Length: 367
Image (tube, rainbow, N blue to C red; front, side, top):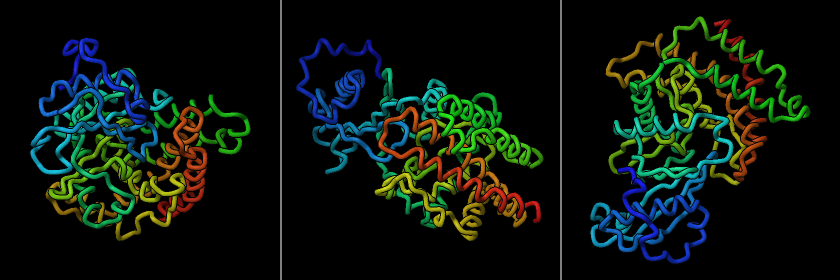
């Protein structure tokens, strides 16, 4: 259900009490939409003002949980936790239009939700949206290393890649890299351009694209941002949900897995959330287990050559992941006020690129 302006006029309702501090941090249009939604739910005791709590870990948007106390039965009739109506309020961050087309992202979100992927879209306001609250927990950094959870992620990612998203099924990776590089150059000072070797970056992108051009590659609908905060799991059923499709597009599936592996170096809930620890990058056994599960989830046992080829391709695509998120970090540093050291994050991604490039490309040529 998408709330429309014609369903209820907030001006016709008694004035709401002064909102709590967290509620005041979301836009007025969002609060009006929340009121419209709550007014339609018969089990909500007071639709005037929900309890609004910021959710941590978002790096592009501001995300909140809105919660209303319900009458007996709540949203499922269970005791305690579920005797409440909850939704997620997503307020778009500054400068997101530099990264992706917001309308295109919303269309993707709506398409995925219609087919049972992720939360439902409940309503939109000028600078954000309200989504269904999923009764599941968001994964932690440590969860990505749990063998059982990692296997579930591998199977779910294969399902995600096979989703028949309408539209042109062409790779976006290289176009996005060049567009983001152009944006970075327009934002950076000459000192920053020198610091991050921006003058040589287009050459690096061209060289990488050329490196991958001769490969037989599998293209799928990719998430492109599979960090732990974008994965939720129901503890009872072990059902896993991938959320947040802002960067989703068609790309080589090896790139999407490479990006997921790189995210294992991050803990966005630590005291220094921008610091990456590449000692946590999955080792050879973990990579093999993930790829075997990913390929085998189709029902057929993959042969060793297929597994090895995908692992090699994933390793090479980590280089593209470092470049794209390095550029993202620089842009974000210039346009976003979220408390995160984007520039240092970018520096680490570029350092990893320059460190790993000769090792990865030389070893694979030699192999």
